Length: 147
Image (cartoon, rainbow, N blue to C red; front, side, top):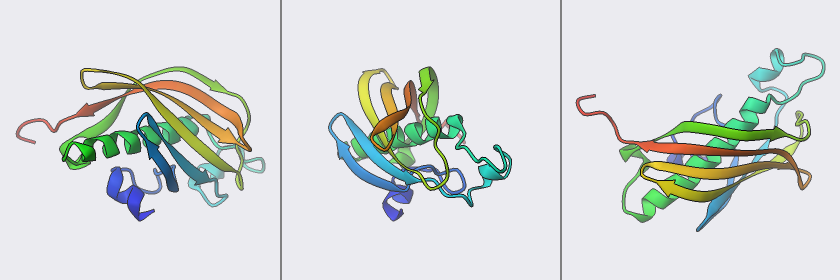
């Protein structure tokens, strides 16, 4: 967890990765165990808790931020110099439900960079099978002058 907190700006209760499994040249793999005590389950189908799809998407975005942060570190900069901001979501497909107690693997792969925009593909795997596939773009924004 410490490595994640050093790598990206997200913090509980809005942190949806537990472990950085690996960072490759073309992407990253992270892990997450879904826990019943998470606050979203109080209202997202009480009695039949299901992990909200939007939070599975967020796990992919955070894994993408991990990948980009590691690339920035290679350049001798840090994530303190830029902020990863979601700029596009496309083709999100939900293929199976994720529930408390499930462990998921979050994989992101870099497709292309256009200026400050990084286009990526992501997937969340449960028991080795896709629960979510998505394409998205993150923009790496520098702080505004004077702020």
